[in-house]
Image (cartoon, rainbow, N blue to C red):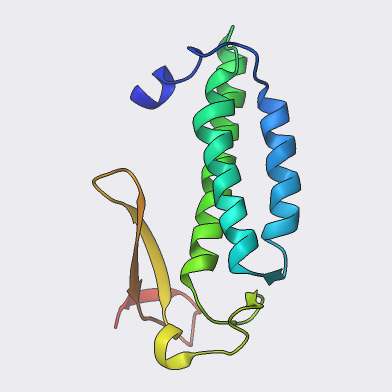
Length: 143
């Protein structure tokens, strides 16, 4: 309820559509195949502005408006987490290529990164190695 109640109390001058349009433009520049710390930091700054300023100013007159705002909030949160994850992984691996870290680093990054919300509501990383069942290609217990 706290999340829902934070919306609809602003000036009413904002637009969820404009927030999505801005997010799309920034993600198109920052979360592309070739990434850099500078662009990823800009992405995170933009997500913060979109989420904690512009989206809170959107008028909510009915349930449909609330649904659009909540969906948009989820999109911005996901984009921010993608940028945070790309910043956290200081190597290049597969489709994740960092201009400022062009080499693969198995000794530091041959693992999966999982995110949980910390006590302060901010994502906190945890790392772990998971093995795959070669017969059924299903994820099984942690190693």
